[in-house]
Image 1: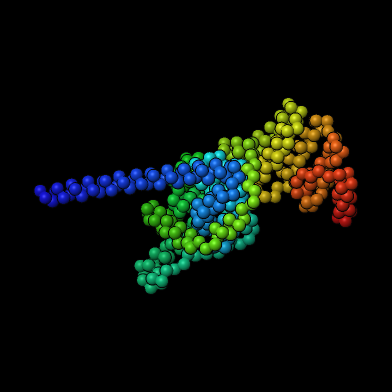
Image 2 (image 1 turned 90 degrees about the vertical axis):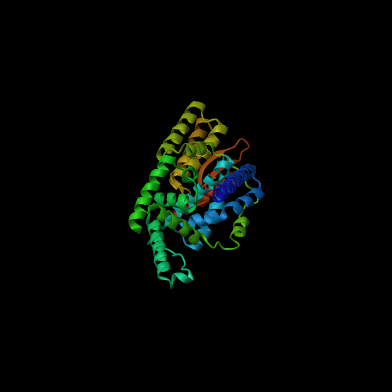
Length: 207
Length: 178
């Protein structure tokens, strides 16, 4: 009897905690959306401070996007800078705050695609492999995990550009399907079908 | 298997994206222009928002240009905006960056607008050296006696008759040297 009551209390506490967490999450999303609206509006007015805020909000994400699609560290830095330069030159295209991230990712995608296109005639650049952690050299289980990661990295890098982009946006940038489709500049249906195709290829390569 | 790939991709993202160089944000902020000027590109925005294919977009803009020139006789303000939008759209259609052939299409359409308006304009697009930023692609006379020119790097400039002669002499010299 006592045990049952304790369990019920535990469940109630757990459910209250989850509710609080959901409210917090919703609140933080709302705040972030509000901030994006405000930055977008100020950018459209040509405010320099808003441009600085945009950099703070997105530079890590854009850099990580560039790394995800397979550029090396230095190239990723250059392309991140190029993305922001293009963004400022094309501020007129920015519609509202909701589209701020998608707009910036679309520019980043274009910058990256133009870079790959320029490299087309050269030999494919060697992939800058992720670094091994210390224990990945010694423990057999970790070694095999690292190898799996490296194999996946190569498989992602070999994907056609359109498929690579959807994988990076959804799985590596953790955007929802709606956000990622917006960022890729395609409809949701197209995005999902590309995602499926990309996953099929990765599954084959990794297994 | 899918879950495993998701997990691995997530880990890959974490490892590949880190660490971001300290100072990168500052480097980017240093590149912010002193004046950010929002340029409205309505024609392009509509086409980008509609997500029509690039070929369809090219057809739309060419048809729009022809219609505007035909229907409105290339009214000055509209003609100029369309010229600019046309130029930007062509860059969008054929890839950002250099797009000399597409640029020439835009300059050509500007020339046609001017002719429709009855302005005496001279188009050098067929003969001009597109690699030369200072070669004159298009010129027309302004009411105050000066000339408006569109140069090889696609920027518009107002010059005096003497300056125009100097530009043309330079072009001629370049052609002889070639």
